[in-house]
Image (cartoon, rainbow, N blue to C red):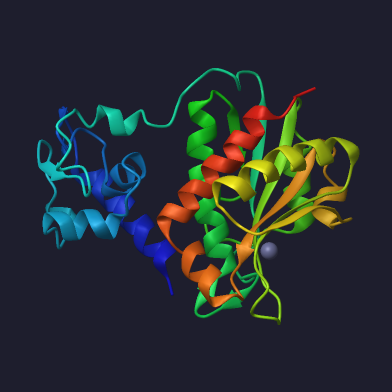
Length: 270
Ligand SMILES: [Zn+2]
């Protein structure tokens, strides 16, 4: 499985080929300068693969500025697709606040690996979506990693410790030997982290309709070494086949990211 590389290749190459003006109307997006299938997929909460198949695009290098791209699932809407782009609220609630997003594992460290699914890959998917939603609320976002690269736990904490008025959110998926175990759990190691964990976890469990395994104390090294309020979110068990089938979907990852963003938004920053 090398989906990460494929997406990045699409993004980079498509960037080189696109350049100019846009119209959004009735489920059709007209490509403009700098836009990519990857960007559109994020904007319209779909996937690059769906956009390609929906539009019969075989090679993204054939994309041209001004090309009309049909957005999956929006063709029946008579209103402008601007509605779709703004369906997630934007605000300035996060101004002056920094969220350090840590996609767990990466590179040689895959984290859990079940049914051909790498935890490190899922973590990055949710982290990327979370970044998008937090930025819509005006937060400054720092990513400990954006690519499939290895980073030590102390390095992750040291990145977080560079920022003032910050919180640290580490994104993970869980696994255990018992394949029936399922649900979400959120960890903290300090008092400030506990409140943040509760706020995030409440949203995650309800919005994702997952079994609520609760907010838990754990002296995980990455949490202990981080000075700001720090949490580690386990978004679901990939050792549970049915939960894994959900976790790999873009829609689940979007809901999880929105839930975490909402939990952060509701957290009483101090
Ligand atoms: Zn993990």
